[in-house]
Every structure is written in C-alpha cells, then in structure tokens.
Image (tube, rainbow, N blue to C red; front, side, top):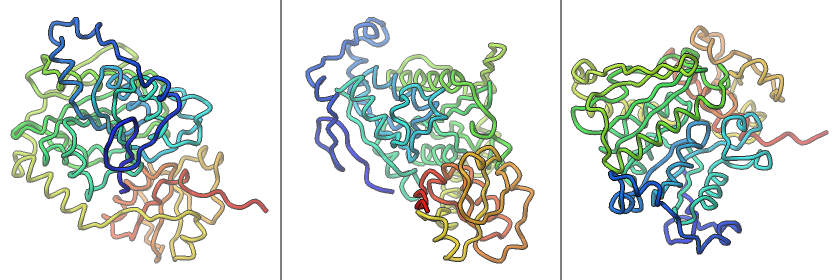
Length: 384
C-alpha cells in the first residue's frame, strides 16, 4: 500500500497538495455555533472534535455523507481510503461529486471537497485498499474508523483490526431498500462482527450495489447514521447500553435492533481478540490475493485463464478485449473450475467481487487470483 498523501495547509508525512479553491478560503473561520449550543457539545466538545482523528474507508455512497458531516462538524483530521475512480453510475448516490469529476480518483475528489467545505480539516488519503499487512498500523493512527465500502472482506478486516487495536469502528451495509448498522467498540468483552457471522458468506449471497441495484437515499441514510454514531463516540454522547445490529427498512420506515450476545459469539472460541488474530494470521498465510496487470494480454501471456465475474449488462457496456470465461460472482460458489489447469484471474469492475470470489475458489483448491482494481485499473487498448 502506498504512503498516504497529505492534503491541506499543514505539515505531515507524504506529499502535500494545494488546491486552488482551498487557497481562496484559507482565511475562512468555521462557525460551529449551531452545534456548540447543544448542552452535550459546547466549547469543550468542539475542542474534542478538533483534535480527533477519524479514518473513513470508502468514499462512495456511505462514505460521502460520513466525510461531509464529519468535515462539517470540524473533525480535525480525516483519513480517506479508496482506490476507485468515479464512474457516471455513482453520481445518483454519491452526491458530493459532479459530472465533471467522472474518471478521477475518489480520494482526490473527496480531499478537494473537504478543503472547500472546511479548509481547517486536515486530510490524509490512501489510494490503495487496506490489507492484513497494513490495517493494524493504519488503525493505530486514528481514534475512530468508519467502514463505508460494499466489500465484505473489508468489513471483516476492519472488525478484526478494531478488536486488535482497540479502535472503535462503525460498520454499515445496504441491500436495495434496507440497511444494517453495527458499532464494534474494540473494548474487551464487547462483541465484534464475527460474533454475529463468524465467516463472510459466499459471494453473491450478499449483493453489491452493482449486482442488486440501489436507490441513492438508502446509502445516504445509512451513511448519515454512521456519521451520527461517530460523533456520539467522539463527543461521549449517550448511546444504547446494549450491543445490537440495527436494521433499517426504508420502504416501510421501520427500524429494529437485533441483540448481539458476546457470550454466544467469539467467546465460545477464545474471545474476539483470539478469533481476530487467527483470522489475520490465516489471511497472511494465504498471501496477497491480488495480481496487478495494466493489460489482460499480459495476464494471458503469464499463463492465467481470465474469468469475468461481472454481470451481463456490465460486460456489454465494457467488454474485455481478451478471451475469457463469463461467470457472474453470484454463481461462482457453484463452479469448481476443475477443468482449468492454469492460474485463474478473476475480473470485476473494481476488484471487490473478484477478490471475494477468489477466496471462495481457493478454499476449493483452485489457484485463483483477483485483478487488482478491476476493469477500472486497466489501460484502454490502443485503437487500431
């Protein structure tokens, strides 16, 4: 993972980027009067926010409201992790960006937006996903983490890292018109994600926005709830004393809390810390799951069989220019690929679904790998 880039007018490790529109607002003084009037916030609460360091993993549908509200609230330092570039299909729900931004890296766009909204906030960007090798070191640099991807592997990694570093993480996910929210406090004895689901489900059982579709306000609402949970934690505001998974249905307007009993979860297997450490060690022993190629011709020349796990409409919109098998990620669990005696390179739009599918196939003995960054990371073939 590359070193973080540092945005804004301050010193820090990494590269410093100056933004023209931020420069114009360099003398801007934020007005937090509406929130400091709250008895539970006040001047002392605002001072807490000013010194807080929050990491946001994912600058998409969930991450956009999280980044916007935390920057607006005056959180002193925001770390932003995202390796994707903005696609036109993102704009209906990722309303921090606009049509002129399509094709640019989301971390850079998000940093510019924060600088325009509140130039006093320091931003560190990470243009590569967190891995088992980097997550613990990165988490240790922050007071709180908000996980905003639609990637199951990333959520499990975030939960494990939270437990092992004692860093709270706010998790959320969406499926069509519904959402789920969970806070993993990182406090010994309190439940983690694996207390509910010890292992990630097979690819396709928990659909992504690409596979299942989504209306923009759904991740908007869940991301806003994540921002609220983050501010409650940072300010020490009252929170429920029970530990629960909050379920929200935006069609019928209902919300319910599913209690999580830590004693019935990881405690049966040595506790959350032991389970998280074992999961990390297992992931490290598997080795990196990704392979980096700029052109798929290079992968084929290196002996890989290419398997496209995108949906048919995605393939029609952006077909691969090499011979490939086409197996949607939702169906990969039923495919053994036993007839292929070569390395298998799985390809999706951004590398998320393909990475999860590769893990599933590896459990069956297939030498499977995921194309890092997916189709979005490929260089366009030269026109003939």
